Image 1: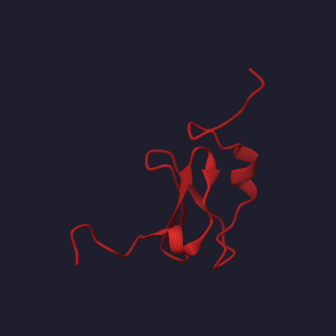
Image 2: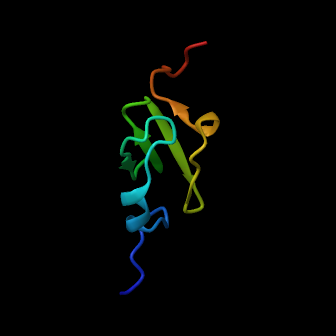
Length: 69
């Protein structure tokens, strides 16, 4: 098999070079949630249809608790 992609369809080589646009720190791939997590910024960037959405306004705030208003 020559097509090497993650379950999200993202090329693992791409994941190796992507960094958080705010902190420029490395990201962690969360396969279950289909997100790239920036521990430094406390944000999780979504992956939609195999495309990482690296916009801070689209990221999920890791500090925000579910159900909190």
